[in-house]
Length: 106
Length: 126
View 1 (spheres, rainbow over the protein chains, first blue to last red):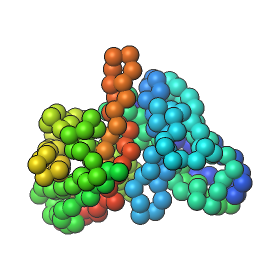
View 2 (cartoon, helix red, strand yellow):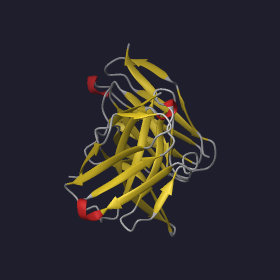
View 3 (tube, rainbow over the protein chains, first blue to last red):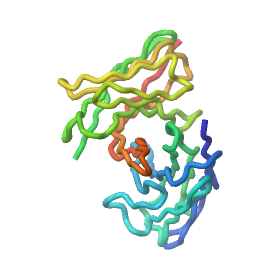
């Protein structure tokens, strides 16, 4: 099984800040990684796929990078709507998700 | 755009079988997407259960494989999940999702979940 580890688990920030979330895979997954945003009571929403490709309709302040085992999601100029929980997910071998990073308002 | 809607009992007794159906609208169930089940519980976060292609080909999470069956009914535009011998650990919100496929270097990878159902809570009672 490929394990995905996100850090931090919780992140406090203010509107206008730039934040970065890290995701590490237990083995090489090349660029087969996606990022999702989830709000309470809702399904996850796809933000980024293949590590750095922005899903249609997702604001350009979201960006992803990395390959192999280490990946990052960066949100620049945080907006009020961005406060949510973020998950990484590998699909190199079956599919597994990270444990999530809760982005909260400072 | 594709819409997905889960349906099924919200309460299942321990040791019995959980059965859920996902109805697809706004798109073809015979497209190149794979059709997935994902669940979310407080204890285990998001967990992929398995997927099915319109041909009937399936892939399952190895940790659940012995208890899971996913099937498809193209005439009804539905795919379904059966999970046997449930316990409290199977209490979760169950989502269905469509999975995009990306191909590179002769290999194809499904697992980009672009459309999701709203989710349905299934509780297992003792």
